[in-house]
Image (cartoon, rainbow, N blue to C red; front, side):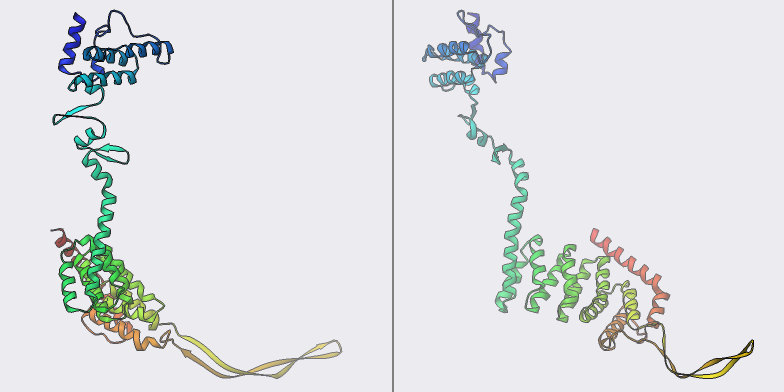
Amino acid sequence: MSRFLGFSFLAAFGIAGAALVHGLAPDAFVSDTWAPPSAHAGDAEAREELVQRFDTLDREDAAAAYRLALELEAAGAMDLARKACEIVIGIDPDHIAARRMLGFEQIDERWLAGDELQRAKGFVRHQDRWMTSEEFAAATRPEREAKEQQEGEARVLGLLALIASGDDAKIAEGKRKMELEAAKFKLAPLAKALRCEPASLRIYAARELGRLADPLAAPALLRRAVEDKERDVRVAVVEALKELGSPSTVHPLGRALDSRFREIRVNAAEALALLGDELAYPYIVKKWEGRSGDFPRSYFSTVRQISYIQDFDVEVAQTSFIADPIVGVLSDGVVQSVKILATEQSFFIYERPAFHGALKSLAGTDLGNKVGAWKQFWQDNAQRLLDERAARYEKLAAERRR
């Protein structure tokens, strides 16, 4: 009687799992005629006895079927224990303990198990495992963001095509819709547009990149600042670089002054002037001086030499006289002094005017077309100009932090 009451008590309150059952007294659910075999799971004789007990089970007695399920579970015969629980549920569909042994849980008055239970709990299956919605969002974020980025950039490219169409209505539509796109979708398409025709599209792309003020746009802008053939485009590009407000912008433009292509050198000088960075002074002065400045003088001579016998040196050796001729040399010619003014003829036509104009713009004054005057100007004012430069960039950085 006590054993049956123990079973009824557990069945009424619902057993959370086999752990609770195992925590009870060893004989709590054991009949008077059978005890779990002590042999290991591989014991064929014990297995045969378990199968026989299951085959002789009363399929109409839910309590007996559940008691047997617990005994089979304790003996390690989980396959038979599950079948016994299925018999219990067939008799009593709302048998809580049997349901739970089979992995069921009641959700909104429905007994669910397996995938249905996980979904009802709000879990999501991803890469062969169940996870919460937060875990799923974190796991799929790179993939989702990549897809979103690709779709966004495709839309921006379509809008750029409208802007490049030449049709006023399409241009207006493209610019209006472009304002609605997120900045993260614009960077790569706009950088690509800097290399496309017409020039009006490149100007628009440069201005938009300036509004974005994304430092990642700098490489594309710097390239177009010295390579684009249209001056209006180059001006728009440099204005965009100024919007980025990076103190390091001047360095790549200064290095471009050493390009082997004259057009690049001239464009770089103009870009430095438009940029208005005081650090451009030494770059331009050094390049100007290196190509047409104070080169050392060289000397060469054109001489004709004539040898003649000037005299004889007579020596007496015993009874003989030895006369050694003394040879003189007459030289006739000129020695010339040469100073190199430029390393190539085009310097005076293209580069010097560009360097001169850039320095005039940077200094706000004209010291003439002699590099020496500009060199002296930099030596006299370098510290002041660099201090002003540092203060300006510090102020700009402070404004952006607000």
